[in-house]
Image 1: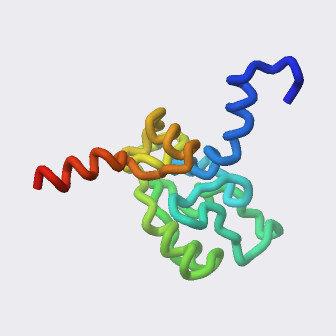
Image 2: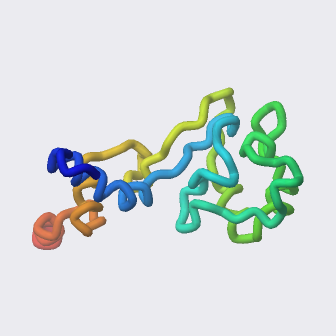
Length: 140
């Protein structure tokens, strides 16, 4: 940050690491997602640690798929511990050649939401404000 930066820009920079915890790669064809450098598993451990090293020549998610974008289950199980492999195998893959993108993990739809982002920044991840919860209880 520079002294001449606006207050808004400083706020954005200050929340960058917090918001980075809410994103993950959305796997399409796997050609643009590194197994080493991107958060690519939408669960608590977004950065799985491969059991094998880079000398085996595997760096991209698509190297774990066949030409029809079906995953190589045995290869995932060889490369990752059982917990990570299970999470990886639960990732829903498209049937077509779709580019990888980004997933906002704070919303079920995977779409970015200013409302939830505000709550994450303020330290309240709950989607339903407390007063709305009380309204729901009283109406029931």
